Image (cartoon, rainbow, N blue to C red; front, side):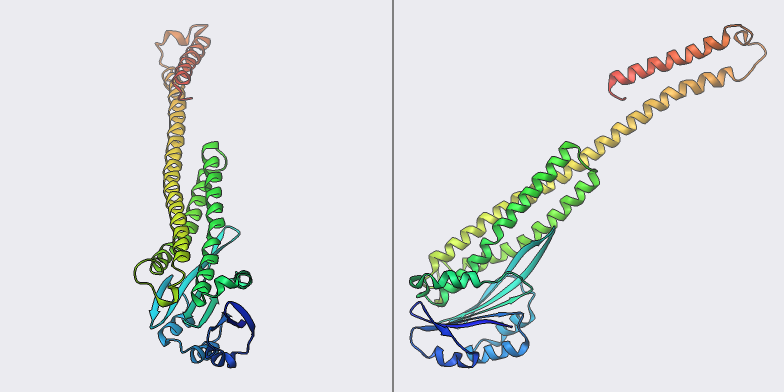
Length: 322
């Protein structure tokens, strides 16, 4: 579906144009065309391929989707893939944006993502001096918008991790539930990490050393995006390590709780063993057992059993087993 198709010249918006006129505007000096598509059909991509002379391999990747974040050069143009990530409740939902950027055009293809870029277009149009840089600045603006949307997600992951840690050490909820929460958090962290790490390598090729011609005037801006990705990657590494530690701590606490339960069971078993032993001896009813015919034999037996069991209970309690 076509979202918009706009022509710009010298950093200023000329007008919204029909798709069939794209090739005519590309011939105008100092003019570039910015087209945005969402979940396009094959015919729409074929039309864009014809209008912009896109490389068939890049078009094939954009039409198929499910690409890892990357940057590829095709002559004087580049093809970039970035992943959009957002939280739907406790689930991480990822989408994909493919961007074709040439000397005088930008084509963005968004798939499986509810996050639009109308705000990005409006922000760039308010800054004609930057928009004069052409398609390289638009490519930066799109990447920067995607990366900036990662930060609130990282904040949410850190907040969720702190809440789970409070539950673990506060004794709230079953430890099984805490472990399940940690694994859900770990899965979400991996989804975001798979979007960030490959993108770092791609953005790194857009600043310093030999860079594509499209990014020639915007290297400093891509360096800033790369710095943001480094910060996010470091925070994700910290979250991942903390989750691993939290899982180990939770399992250790489960083992400690089981050990405490086993101690209590063993202590009570020892106490009741005394009753069993004395009852077994006095229950044999041999003829020559003086205490059986003694008037106070029964009270004495009960007192002995209670006394011994009471002493055992005192010792177990003092040692922390009960």
